[in-house]
Figure 1: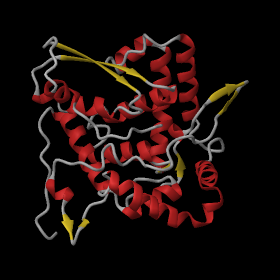
Figure 2: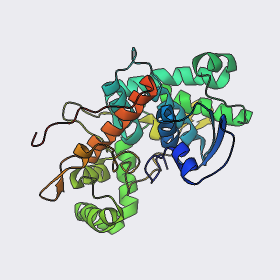
Figure 3: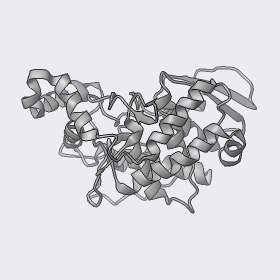
Amino acid sequence: MYWGYSPALDLQTEWGQRGLSGSTDELRILIVGASDGRHILKTLAQSHGYAKRKLIFHVMEGSLELMARQMMLLTVALEPSQVLGLHEKTRLFLDIYGNILVRPNSARYVADKATQLIHMVTDPDYRQAKMPLLKLDRLKYKERDYLEDIFKFWQKDGNNIFHPRAHWDSRLRRHLGTRYDAKEGIFDWDYHMRLRPLGGERINSREYKHWRGTGIAFTWPETECSKPNCTLASGVVLIGDRLCHHGYLGDIVSGPYVNYGIECEDEDMLRKTNGVHNKRSTDIAERNLMRLFSELQTRQPYVSQAYPEGE
C-alpha cells in the first residue's frame, strides 16, 4: 500500500517489445493496483522518443487514499519550473512519497494543494482549467465525496490529528511482538537475508534500517523531517463534523526504494568501491526523478552531469 514493489516502466516500450498491435495514434492503458503513478510518469516522460500519439490511462486502485495520493504526486510532477525548480521538485516528491514525517515546507505544500484538489473534485470546470488531463467521470458521487474528505484532512496540515511517530511505533510493536526489543538485529537480518537476495543490494543498509525504525526513507543532511505526512494516513472518515482516521496501515517491511531507487541509466550512480555501492538508494531515486521531471518539462533526453572518477 502507498507504493509499488517494481521499478517504474515505460509502458510504450513494454507495448512495443511484446509486439502488440493497435492504433498508432491512440494507446489506451489499464493500470490496476499499481499503488502509485510511477508507470504513468515514466511513460509520459519518455514519450518524446516515440511517434506522437494520444495516451489514455485508466487507473483502478483498491482504496481512494491511493487515488488521492496519485493526484497529489501528479500535481508535484507537473508543476511548472517557475513554481518549483527541478531540484526542489524532486526532493518534494520523494518527501511526500516515502516519508511519514516530512519537511515543514513539504507539509505546507500538501495543505495548500489540498485546497486546489478539493476544487478539482467538486468543480469540473475548475478541474478542466487547472488539470485537463485528469478525468474523474467514472467515480461515483459518494467516492468523490470521500476524496473531498481526504483532501480536507490534508488541509489541516496534520497537527493534532495525525501522530505518525506513535502510529509507526505501534505497527512495529504489533509486527515484532516479543522481538521488539531486538528490532535493530531484526532489521539487519531482514536486510541481508531478505531484501538483498531479492535485488535490493543497491539499497544502503543504513537508510533501510533508518526507515524501518522511523518511517523516514529519504533524508538529506541539510534538512529535517518534523511534520506529519497526512497523505500516508489510512481510512480517513467523516464522523459528524470531525475527520478521523485509522492511523498508518502501509508497508513497514520492504520500503519505498524499489520503484525509483535500484535502477539507473547513469553508470556513475551504480559505481562500487571495494564491493560497496557509492550511492544510496535515495541518491539513485533523486537522479531518476530529476530525469523524469526534466524530460516531462523539456521533451528532450536528460543529460546528467557525471562526476569524474574518484570524486
